[in-house]
Length: 114
Length: 114
Image (cartoon, rainbow over all chains, first blue to last red; front, top):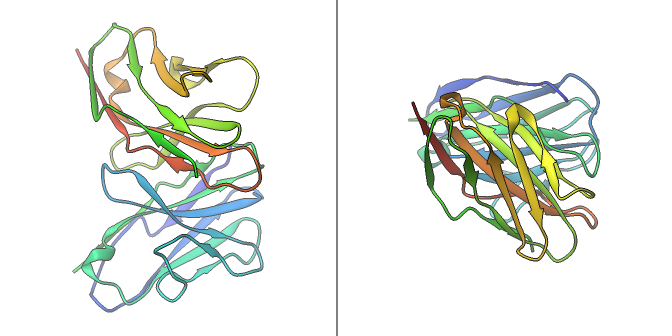
């Protein structure tokens, strides 16, 4: 298994500001992903964080709104830019070691935008 | 494109009784199937997976799941439910061919009564 640490765990933000969420894995992983989840709802994949190159975004998510970095095999950041109340959600970092492996998840970052 | 369905929003069971949480899937190739559990205000925890081999997969906390290719199902089961099993359960699937994202079901809330 892998231990994934996310911070902040929660934050309250003002409309129009940006927030960066950090994700640290305790060992090297091949794949890292960012998901969004409304409380009690299913998960929606935002993007795949690619090490050393631009992230791969899912339909409906763009780099200008959700810039992602992955400078090495254990660390990634997700920025939520120019936030609006609609961005209030739980953002989850996840990682996978190999192509057939399961995803491991961080505890999530709960953002509230006022 | 792959998809997964969890037909029950909630499953109620008495402690000590067997439980089943249903999941059906659709993929174009061979499936990789997963079950996750989420407790309130926590990230997702991996329970078990089917990649290949024996159709009956055993996982954490006494849970098991049976892969049924003809019915395209992967139901989660436990012989004797505990109150502490009460949580939100997610089934997920992805195609084994190439890079495919993991798609999650809508989740099933399990409520185990004393």
